[in-house]
Length: 248
Length: 282
Image (tube, rainbow over all chains, first blue to last red; front, side, top):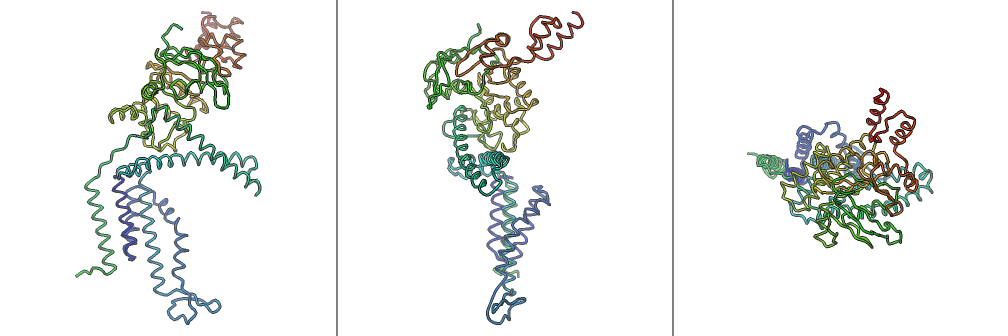
């Protein structure tokens, strides 16, 4: 699939999911993205579930605060509640529905982003940004940053190991000192690396632009049609479940 | 050597800004189409000299000639020189800038202004020649050190240089990958490309090179065929070089009469053949 197709699909679905406060749409989006990621893109189901459970902690804590209300007057509307001092804490039907809705909506949006990041490599995203006519300087910087994140991580790891093996992190005092040295060393090393990189690029006739071979993707009409169909279906479901349109 | 030189230097001198004399009066002539090794301890000026070969560094004194023509530091002449002389740097991590192997290798040929088809062709050929065709779509950061090294070589091969300069190509490699890289350099050389490498490994230099330069403290203190170099005991001592184990064994056994005194063996197999012939009494 063309990276632009994937991005349109993921982003449009996410917008629809966020635009409608309808549990039905959210559930549909979650299921749809799960099917796409697991069955079509071949992401192992176990791994996918694990990924989906990652944001659960934030979601649950966030949603709890929405579900819980507190009041000083008599808690008639509470379905369930408890009292601390003169405050009543509890959940009403409305707040529970709101919390559930929010939960599903957030999970739906997350699953859209997962679909994009699980199926699209950074390279495809760069190629897409180039197609979208972003300034080359911006894309070059992005790709250099992306490449050197890994070099930086590896260097950090090596320095850390060499420090730790010499009691660098044995106590608080050593830790502070080692951490400071790690950061400064990383900085000088990065500077040195960037200068070396410039030399090696010059050696290959670098003239100010990092031109490389782009993979050519072609947009498929079939895919675009299918995306339009799916998005329209989701849109109609959303409109219907929010009561904007009625079936005769 | 009587062969036409591809690179020549005359009285080359270079000092770093801190005053370190990196090169002192280097006058050498590198024969075309041969396998050249530079031997010398760390800090002896090998890398600095290499960076002069394609104009990445400019000498303070002296002249460099490429293919009989003096190196000029005008923009277009420098580009032309860098097309002809490719350098593979010691640490591939500083050379690989792209996250995609294919895009990484395409950088050089695109800079040469080739058409898309030609670039595709050269990238494919360079990947086939270095045996990394299967890594085409792998992100650079998932490659092993040996694989990165080969991508770095493919980077330069795709520009089809006439001289390939390798700074310590076998450093940090295990024996298996070292063998692979050396065989690769042999193949490249058999296509007529002059291959220049620096190394600390006297065994590799002895077996592989046609001609050896020995450097110490910024000067070239000796040059010659491997036999000439490794039978010059004074030179070896001055350069703090060991002798190749093949030569030590050959000399010892032939002095005791256990080996035929023909030519010193270049490989383990040659040594064993000599030994077998001797035992059989032929």
